[in-house]
Length: 185
Length: 306
Image 1: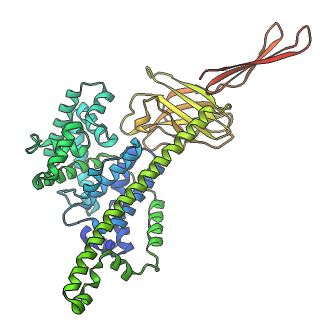
Image 2 (image 1 turned 180 degrees about the vertical axis):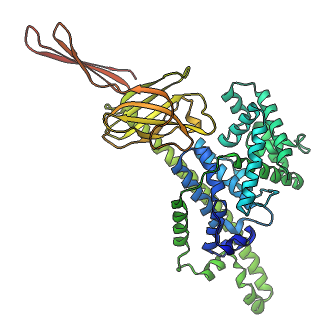
Image 3 (image 1 turned 135 degrees about the horizontal axis):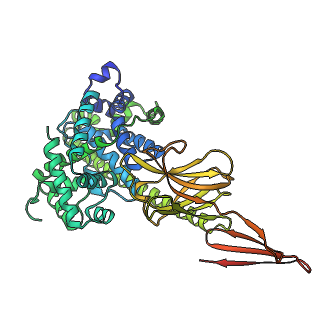
C-alpha cells in the first residue's frame, strides 16, 4: 500500500474521482497506489491464484477508469465500492456464477463510516477488523469466512460443515451482530 | 415481506450473500421501494466490505499497475480529444449555444439528448453484460472441450492419489504428456485460512513442477479442474502439498496426497510369456508375446471401461 506523490497524498477520493472522470491518468495512478493493496489482498484470499488475482485487480481499476462518472463519491465510499466490486468479481470467477444483477447495480452504494485515504488509517482499521474476527468463537469465524471469502449461502455452509441449517443461521446472525457492534466507530 | 425486515442483521446477511430463497427475495423487493431500508443496506454493505481487511495483506506485483496504465493510456489516446470525450459524456456542453439561438427548442433538444444519453448508458450496460455472459459461456465450452480431449485421449494416464496420513483423503489425476495438460479432482479437508493445497508434477528427472493451486471450491469435489504443464514432460509422481496461500515455487509443506504414475510394465514368467500393461484414462490394455517352444505369437486385449 504505497503512497502517491505529495500532491496526490493530500487529494481526497472525491477530488481524485473528479479528475479520473476528466481522464486524468495520474489521478487513477494515485487511487491505485492508495487502494490496490487492499483489493489485491482480498482477491488473493478468495482465488488463491496470483495470475487470476492480478487480472481481477487490473479489471477492478480499469472499470473504475471507464465508469468513474457513474460513481457518486459524495454518496458512497470508494474503498467500500472497490472491495465489494473486487469480492464480487473474485467469487464470480471462483464459483463460475453471476453475483446477481441487484448486487452489480448497487455495489457503488456502499456507505463506510471510515476514511481510508491514508495508509495509517488503513492499517489501524485492518488491526481492528483482524482482532474483531479473532474475538469470534471459532465456529462463528469459520461461518463468516465461508460466507465472505467463498461466497457460500446458509445452506451451502451447512452442507460444507455438516452442521444443521438452523445452527448455521444462528451462528452467522450472532457473528454479524457482534461484528456490527465491534466495527462501528 | 410487506413491512421492514424484522431483524437488523438481515441487511448484513444479505450483503454477505448468505441470505437465500424467500428471505433474500422479500428483502430485495422491500428495499426496492423503501429508501430508509436502502440506506440501511448501504451501511450493511460498508460493514461487510470491511471483512476484506481480514485477509492477510499482500502487495500486488508492480507489473499490474504498468499493464493497467498502459491499457488506460491506449484508451486515452490523442485521437479522442478531451473535448470530444466530455462532449460524449455530457451532451450538456451544447446547451449554452442552443439556448441563445433557439430558446425553447433547445430545451427540447437537451431533454431529448439527456434521454438518449440515459438510454445509451442503459444499452451500454446491457451490451457489456451480454458480452461478459457470452465470454463466460465460451470459456465454459472451451473448458469442457479440453476436459473431453484429456479424458478421451488414448495416451492419457489416470493416476490415483492416496493420502499418507489424512483420513479419507483421496484424489485422481488424468495426465497427458503429449498435450501438456492434466485434469485433477481431490477430496481433502478445507485447508487452514492462511494455507492452500498445491499440486505438483514430479518428473523423471529434475525438480517438481507446480501444476497450480487447488481453488477452495475444488478442494473436495468429484468435479475435475484443468492445468497446463510443459508438453512432453514425463511424470513419475503427482503429489499435493499444503503450502502458504499464494503457493510456492517448490514444495515446502507436508505431502497430503501422493500418486505414482503408472508406467508401461513389462515382465516375463516361466512360460516365456511377456506381458505389457498399459493403462490410460478410460481403459486398460494388455499386449502379449509368446515365443517359447514354437513360432512367436502375439496379440492384445483391450477393455474399454466407459
